[in-house]
Length: 379
Ligand SMILES: Cc1cc2nc3c(=O)[nH]c(=O)nc-3n(C[C@H](O)[C@H](O)[C@H](O)COP(=O)(O)OP(=O)(O)OC[C@H]3O[C@@H](n4cnc5c(N)ncnc54)[C@H](O)[C@@H]3O)c2cc1C
Image (cartoon, rainbow, N blue to C red):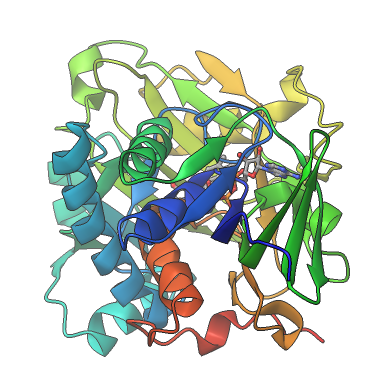
């Protein structure tokens, strides 16, 4: 009988994988972590200094417990590693009463009994004058447990907490394939093969390379930063909190104010220029097409920002057909677990998703319903 190298392996230590590794190691489990680059690198989906953190998840009411668990786990991780990961400044969900953003946030709040503050158009104009073109029927719902999270800091904290708890890290180590064998799962790398009882596969945009047959859409999605045309203080994060704004006609913008280490961030929910990519070949050079749409939306809806971005960086998301994540056992195999299909909104849930992956790996009941994320739902 061959000897196992460890009980578990996590393949891909980005947002989901680093937190799964930490949650397994913190249970005292023997776990190996494989990452093709260095944790916190800028080549996948988890770089660019900030992400929005929200608990009134308009994408699905079932994500509210995931976000709530995530902030609790991040507070633990911050204390354990002396790192700042999430700053709560509140988030304005804005749009017409019947818009997708307002309806989604109301559904999330109602499903979980979350009290919210609702602002009228007049209140938005008075309290947040940075937002231009607020229509008379627009409203805003303030998510109080929301703000700005730091992706690179979180990944580094999770991997270092995992290592401190005994996880063995293999960085700069690309996994060539993950194969179910009689004795468990074989993880093949250029240097050698590893045998584990279960593998947790979390390779972000590279998912299709390791697990073919899932409908993954890795998409190049640039990050864009802006500066005020005058009076920089009006756009600092304490005066210009995080927001998602439904513009109607199928588009939204999201963003947050500046802080000591970053400018104002604004991005569109979608852009016809976004393109499907092979993550190994993604074009990291920047062209004016990368920010033409967001610049136009900034000049229309945030007129006191300079519409010429102060920074642009290539990044990726991996969409699924229904824009929900994949979480669970692909192909129904008890030796494999999968976390992926981030669909552009998974960073805020990384600790919760990592916790569920650890629970499933250890045969525990997941802390929340994950049926809507079943990785086999498209088959
Ligand atoms: C522009 C933009 C804005 C966003 N805004 C938000 C937001 O405001 N809020 C939010 O919650 N989310 C947001 N997101 C989404 C969020 O960033 C992603 O959902 C999240 O970072 C995805 O993490 P992941 O673990 O799936 O992928 P990744 O972090 O990319 O992790 C995958 C890891 O696996 C490694 N890997 C892959 N293949 C192998 C292999 N064969 N061997 C070893 N290692 C491998 C990769 O190198 C990588 O480190 C945004 C994304 C973008 C692009």
